[in-house]
Image (cartoon, rainbow, N blue to C red):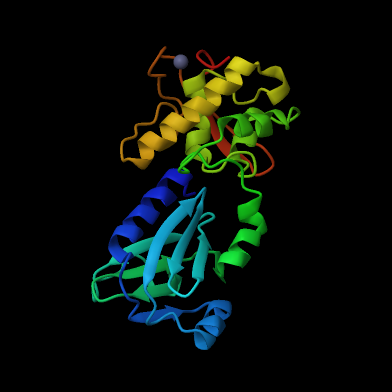
Length: 254
Ligand SMILES: [Zn+2]
């Protein structure tokens, strides 16, 4: 599942390739988008900027048109040169935005909507999103307040909730808790203030480091391998209603 840091990198790549360019072709298999494109064509507009917010990616066109996509499990945006062979099959294509130099293709994005600035500001998923770890500003106190607001839930599950904190997926959930030395199965109510602050600070540090291109996993996908800190085998268990995999060191995380 794409996490905030990979969406952030995708948005930066798309911004570099597309910002300031004129759309020369627009194609979509999504009926809702196609209807709007028929009334108010995307072709001919200028791409003004591409941004991310948590796991949402937003492409802004001239004339107050915003394309909001959310990747969920399998969605992705790719950038190609015109005529270059795609790395995913054509049947996975949902949206193609063409410019003279680059072609941006959205594959299997489950959420794709056109917005005006006004409707974007009213969008419930975006409005209810917690503080964005990769945002231009990050409200640490608000993030801590939202975590504390879920005392009966296990901390690992709370970290995945985008209304609490935006940007963390399954990888950085496990990694942040290892970094903070906190057992993923503890309830929020059982953690003290210092532990909660360490978790948020670790998540912030790890996501930003990964967004700039460097990352090595301490526990994620290392089940059975020795902990890099103490040598104890890393454990793995499914956790929460969605049974998302959690990796942790039983020795370092208490
Ligand atoms: Zn360890």
